[in-house]
Length: 436
Image (cartoon, rainbow, N blue to C red):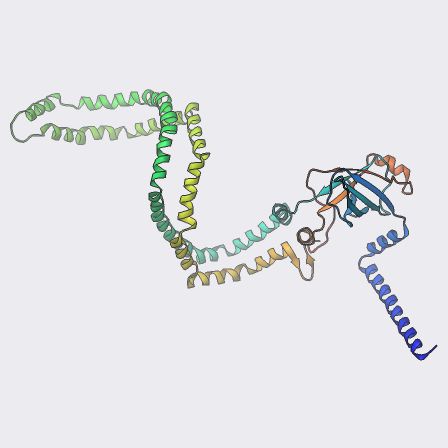
């Protein structure tokens, strides 16, 4: 053996020794930190795996590596995976599955179910802000607000009051301008509602239901007040003044002056003395009108007609768009107000007060560099960024007791049927994170 060959042999031996030492070191590290993973590797290497074929008459978006779970199992470990997925000329899909050693005994009566999970924004928000998380965040915010309420109010109350006062004035001015610009459209709507709602619905129900109630309830009080006023009327005094006004003599309008004096000195005091009775009557009439079924039905129909009127909705949307959103004067005023030195100082002080709770909220939602990310955030990252856990198969055991009696070494069928779930669900995996 030449020296050059010996050097190569020694170098190769050192490389192999380094690789072996690295594997041993890695094995020991994994054994110390995650002993269950070593058990899974040993089980995976020492037990026989089984292959199962599945053919469907429809297309499935499964890919090699997609997991298979056991339906209803408490364990979040896959019992198999998709080995290959091929689309057929007839539009179907041919799947080749590999079942792991932890897969239970299977019979030809059992079947697979294809499931998939949504990755919508609604799912992401539901995952990140589930009930327990919302309760936790609510507690953090409430505690922070309670501790700093007085100081925050003192900081922002003058800014809010000044902003609302200025915004209210601008909105009032621009609202009048917006209605004026749309006066033809407003007149058209008013005329249509006067015909369709007022004349056809509200006026008839007022005549048939409301006015009879007013007449029946107010008649005794009106008669009493009228009688008292009539008792104070001087027919002779009004009569001769009326006759005098009809003559060509000077100083006319004696009747008008007498009537005005009578109203001020007699009628008004009588009516004022019955004001309590008038208020009681008003409440009584209002109660009867409010409880009248035909009146309530007419008002509800009128409100519904306005609420469901696309023309009115578009009119109001256009007005609000001009007054609140596309309003340069309002935007300029608010920007000026909330970028003032007083506003910047208020925000700086508020940030200093609320920074601790903001950090706590961030830790609760996302985790820490030392403790790791939270299970919720990990789930969102896997689904939205890594595109994991979006589709999988579940094995449905029809008769678990009968399958268990067969034993793990029983022969498995070569083919299984497959169904498709129409409901979105979540992959049965358990993620560890900062919150655990």
